[in-house]
Amino acid sequence: MATLPVTLDRDDPAPLGAQLAAQVRALVLGGALARGDRLPSSRALAADLRVSRSVTESAYEQLLAEGWVEARHGAGTFVASAAPAPARAPRPRRPAAPPEQGLVRLDTGTPWIDRRHAPAWRRAWREVSAATPPRGYDDPRGLPELRAALADRLARTRGVVVDPEEVVVTQGTTDGLRHLLLALPPGPVAVEDPGYRAAVATIRDLGRDVRDLPALAPVTDLTGAVAAYVTPAHQHPLGRVMPAADRVALLAAAQRAGAVVVEDDYDSEFRYDVAPVPALASLDRGRVAYLGTASKSVAPSLRLGWLVPPPDLLDRVNARRRGTHEAAAWPVQRAMLALLRDGYVDAVVRTARRTYAERGQRVAAALSPHARLAGPVAGMYSTWLLPQADAVRARDAARRAGYEVALLSAYARTSGAEGLVVGFGGVTDAALDGALAALVSGLVGSPSPDRQPGGTN
Image 1 (spheres, rainbow, N blue to C red):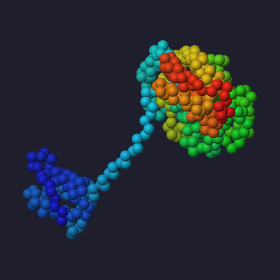
Image 2: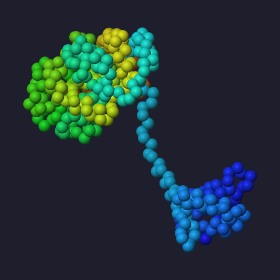
Image 3: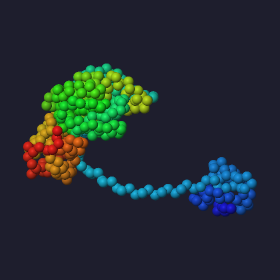
Image 4: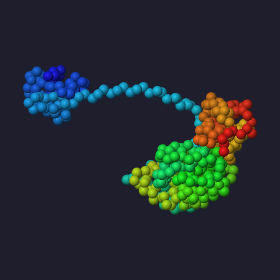
């Protein structure tokens, strides 16, 4: 029979029975009492503690109700629950390689924002704060007013004439791509190579295979693919505009294969050599799914985009989103509506276009003696072809100076593309000049730009 090393405090405001139950419970949890240990009878324990039997009986009744003890007829009271097994100390994790700290990133996705437009930004969010949010879940398609504004903008700037009911507001490009692919039958997705890494990751996360499409070659065969993901207005990351003949060939290949063409129109408004090229979706609304984003014109952190599916997929996309309650955040949608309505987005695009044009010329002046431009300079980055060893040397020189510049090979899968991808949107002028000086210092002594890097299609 287990002895109970308990002490009751008559000066404690807690009832004696509650004190006794708590101490027995602690003995079990601490391992002093094990499962199957027999406890003293209520009469014997009352005598040992010099309390009335009603105290010990009330304690045992409480422990019995909680499952700590069990009463066996004719045998007594026994411990019913053992102490939990001690938690195993977690195995020490091998420290991950520390990320590059303090580097200024010259990436392809961070836009330049003119701070002179900040008052309009603040007005939009003040309007959101004064609005009454919906009581239930939002319409998964998006706010009707925002869809109407986006439909108007698509017709005005991209030549895509759609009804607001055909527009689906998403949480960015990859969210729109994910919902579109979930509405398609099983099968691989063809993607440009080199191409947008986040799109490749999204496709693979859905369990689909990725089929590589040479980024600069006409697409003539999509047999077996359910979709082809392309960036025709500004190929990411090589920068080329898809020629008209290649557009027609792509649509014909998709028609023969029964595949959907997914057009990511990520920064089409930022051309400064020619007028923005009309969207591919303007040629065939029945075959092309259109993806747009606010990340390049407003801010990536807004996490807002839009999808215009082919008409025969619209109901399936909307039904799935209704079933999962997936919708872009209501405050973000309200803010975007205000920014469109008050002209903020148009103003930001105009000023950014001028800034990118000037910065693109500075990048070209610095790098053209050492590397070959992959395509027209447009948007907020330019891509330069050169052998991998030279690109790595330039990249490393930039890192030593405090800047992070991407290698083109990071965007390639089987193409073997080599070079540098230099973003110039989300940095200051001083940072851009510092990064360019560091890149040039790493390229001094490299072979001339006439040398052809391998695998650039």
